[in-house]
Image (tube, rainbow, N blue to C red):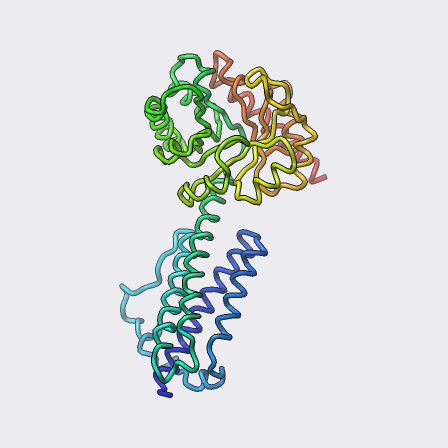
Length: 364
């Protein structure tokens, strides 16, 4: 077999294996996902078995010192410097492309008559397409993880029916100024065209303020305004359907009243869980009241952020935070007040106070 072809096999096998190891470690250490990490490890080990050339033989033909494409050949070319990575998504993309390109080289080499007995073109093609799918999933998980980590603090549901004609944009501006971290737009009655105009303005305001903007129920509306995510209930579109339709960087929250519903939502890819109604509420009279104990139980088993909702106000918000809620969703406790900004500030301050106490207790 020609010396040059063995060098090509060696180089591309190394590139693809190294890239897979990077992705494997992202899944393992960043996402803390054992199953995802194992899938990547299996690909890496399987790739080594696909090359039916003794490793000693490949090493015998390696000549890194005189490789015309090695790093030493670019020492005097400043324009060929190291590519700058802006974050984990860039890291995943760069290494996935490295793997995919290397696998394509191996796939084409395997078509040569003198190499067909040692390399299987179809196997490298299958692995390449598997990496395409894994790249998409990793980028999705990382992008959503960054947004999901922002599900904390006060989560205000801007319900147009509760506003009863008050200006949505002015109210949202007060909510943002008060310190809310998430705004959910909810409208159960208006025409979609009207809702679209309002949602577009709210999305722009949230963007400027660095606040997450979530749309309730309507997948088409969330996509039309490029919302950060969608919130669904048990009677809405199934979560797997929503996940297939939404862009891969959008988060999905799901309302639950039981541990079984929460487990199902997490298994199907929910980025956060809203549990409630924690207390009786006048906003949604038919809501099932689950109590603070349900929140405590879910905190023990749910790795995703938990949003407590239902009947929460300044008098009971401390109980909800002490029970482990990552965020608290409110409607009337904010929209029912004349001073919306002040109401948000007071609730946020109470949350911070209780969280600080809980953290101090854990330290001692």
